[in-house]
Image 1 (tube, one colour):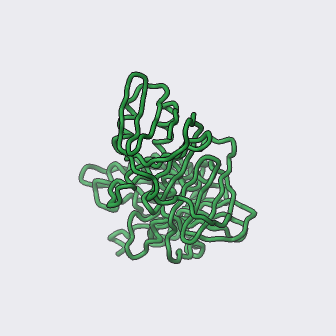
Image 2 (cartoon, rainbow, N blue to C red; image 1 turned 90 degrees about the vertical axis):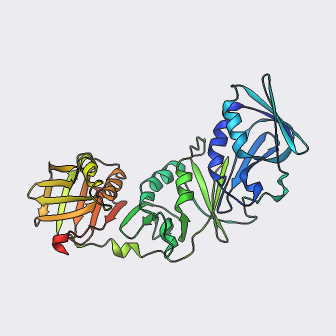
Length: 369
């Protein structure tokens, strides 16, 4: 294997691929990145067995071949090399790299035991926009559970096509984030680990083709574009019937500026996070005014915000962090808030937009216990 490539082009690719290399593994070859030089492309692969990535870039290939290079030292030294072209040569069990007047060599593995990233056969289920998919993931992924031994599906997101809508849904037992787009596609339903979708949403595709393909194979999902493929195991289990849960009978409705409320809750959070693990912020609603308040040993906070209200007066409490996450996910200037009461859910929707819902359970105040 002999090839050359500009350092900056290679480094850009490495920064994407390295996130799929496991931090700790009992299988030595998984600690490396597989390099494959073929025709006019250099392809890099990495996997932790739960998720994997293959991406390729044009390079000057003199001699085809492949090798697995342990990633830690390799990444560190490449970042410190000068700008310009890097020349790679494989010599038995070593990779030799030349950069200007610099010469170095690193041990490498033969690629035969490196796991295949792509299944031999898969079923195509959907084509979708890179940018829109990433936006939908970012608007929902905060609501996945960080860890759930009893309900592992809560650590992932539901991807489904149902009744002409492509839904992405996350929930952790206290909140639901649901985003959808109208689509003409056959129905399907899978639960994808949040970690996989988080990494996917950080990748800059920068391709002429703005769409990617979604495939499934056995217990895997495959996201595939011209130069990038990501695979992941799927989570097994039944997702909660979210459509029924978000049907809330509102007692109070509020129309309010998104940023004004977000900034107020962020100010209240400064005090709330010092008070308890639930980060309690109170919302008091009276005619035409919503009051955001919090209190703790470090001080108290209160702020009035003018808005449109309908229904009865209400005092309700929420986890400030959860409320901030929901408000940050809204990309429109005004929101509708439908409160079910002191102990019933809150539904947040952008005004005049029908494809985004946040559901949030309140915290029961001691006086209502």
